[in-house]
Amino acid sequence: MASPLPLEANDELVAVAWLATVPGLSAAMVGTQLPPDVNADGSQADWIETGFVTVTVVGGNPDDLLPVNQPVLQVDCWATVPGSNKPPWWKAHALASAIRRATWDRYRIPRALSPAASGVAYPTAVVQSAYIATSFRRLYGDDSDYARLQGDLALSWVTANDVLD
Image: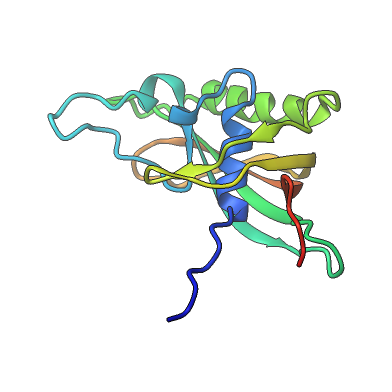
């Protein structure tokens, strides 16, 4: 019988964990997929009040000699006002600004993160650096009148206490 594969975080899990620690954001405001704007009971979803941030890997290359991951992630900042046809651009811009400012905070970027998904805790990861690779820009044409800003975030991260055998 083959031994089980090691449990390792991936770029999206680490990006979600890092973004959730950005001042002004929380784990409930970040994910890989935009949640529904209405809960199963018909009530308004919590993210409508705060906005939401989604991440998707769009590029980057891991280091070829060391276990250092260097993804580039598409970051989308979402905001809406139910029943309005006026997207709340100011709220989406506030999310993007918080992320941009966090990349300038060189003292607090390297911090231990606890990536998790679906109740599974992954090994601790440490983001070593973060920067905005492309400026946030408005995306138009959403039928729901959501405000959506999109930019690219580059990270460099490692698994803490990683040992190569």
